[in-house]
Image (cartoon, rainbow, N blue to C red; front, side, top):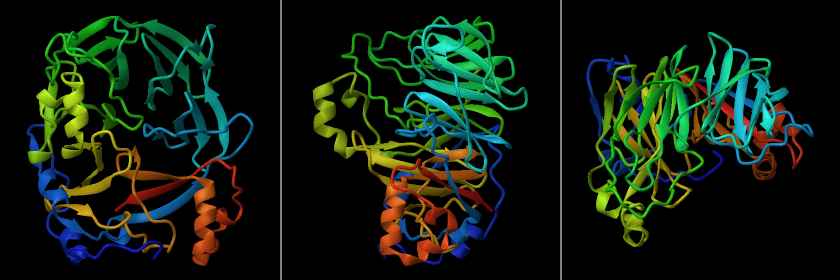
Length: 383
């Protein structure tokens, strides 16, 4: 074991996690509640073998054109590729980690963008959409620029595909002036529909952004565009007609009250933010993995909700114990598929741990690492 695990309330999870009904709830027609506040107050050890089918380490190739800085959480994978949003660009790798290309580049010319805010992958139609608000740029899977279209919102922050002709854009409301939180466009930039904010900030609020690199306002799961505002307890599916509630996260005393919102009262927010929790739910077929922190803090903990058994708990110690290959401990950063999780390890950190834990030297890809290499992805396919 690489790191000492806290033994608070340790019980056997072979029965708790794997027993009972293992079918993911079909929530297309109902809303389920995730008892998050209960999970925060229930601490248990979790071993990777209880939930995972396989572990793979993918070192991302290091070249002069692929040097990565600050990998963001909106990574995606297709059957052939891994897409990494890092350092203001989108980098495309093979599934084995070989660098292929950067999609687009900074500039003012055709196929170039001023800033990359978010992206969406249309795997069936082999298209990539980059958001450089208010522009959306479209490329093929080989990185060839196809076209641009302009949307009518300058504060579009993230995007997701509703279907192969409809794009949903999340509109960040900084001061209560926005009439919509999600706007739908076709691939010509024409507005199709719009939905009012799910969190109502009083007009005339102080403004100010609280965006984090790893916030997941919009993402895709099970072929559906999903949306969760950072101050809302509800996870929605975006359809052409509505925002449809799917899950409600019961926050209890950990919910940030609107009167303490950073846009409403910045001073009160700063004084009380450590009392409330900020969650980043990651959905897979059988679980929600929910990294959480107090507001304004980057390092946090991990809550797990089992859809089948309704067990909800915080993982003790420094993450999920890797008892499968005696390799690196695991705390997911995001999902790269409906049932695949990924964490990111800096090469220098892996090398440091190899000095402390000789067993890591038995993993071949680690022995080849250099201090300045690109990070290593730890990819976990779930059972």
